[in-house]
Length: 304
Ligand code: GYE
Image 1: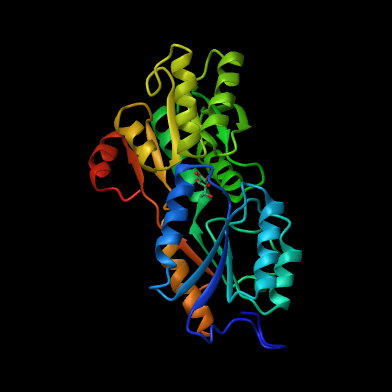
Image 2: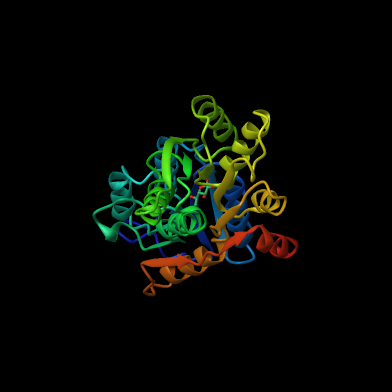
């Protein structure tokens, strides 16, 4: 229902909140759990009419989806920006149309913080730090050689996790000998790891920015006749089901959690924004970390 002339679109006068959500894609187990959380929470029963689109990890698709939500006159737009930069123009358009925007999962690098109402998501720098601290605590003094599988180039989690990990190993003799993007997918994680294994014969540990790339690396390591978790240690971020299973099975050594269940917070913030209430600009989601023993204990009752 388009906004009446001059009136802000936010209002949901019919009692139903029409929310347009532009998802990054379907690149990982984390993303699947995140999509499910949003679709399970923003239901008609809960007062929402959810319009959902998958951008297949392309910013141009996200911008197109957001523009179409603006044209449709939705009450709220929410999205998880694939990369950090390049959002100012489309966010200005949403603002001019009076449609509030909520960011979930990933941040934008916008000078003007009035372009969005709230940002709900994890602290990715801290996740990288937690991973790096575990590596430094366990291997400093051994001249450990690390290869890094980075997330999508230009995305907040790739930038921040790299930064956090590097700051945590600073001053130790842990060394990153190679680093490349695997775009957060299992297939690309495997291909990039194959390249690392061909190029280097002294890899001690893989730091993967998500479980899926770590799972791809496991395939490459096994195909090379090596034992993942032993000959080459693996540290990842996310703690989704398949990652936790590999951790419990001894193929991964440590996982820092990134909670994908953002649906409930998104629903609450969207309702508050529509009701004209003040909302927190930044909602930080809490994350844990697991070693192999903790994974075995947590697996049976894990939600995702
Ligand atoms: O870690 C990865 C996904 O933005 C936090 O995106 C998210 C990341 C997550 O593809 O698995």
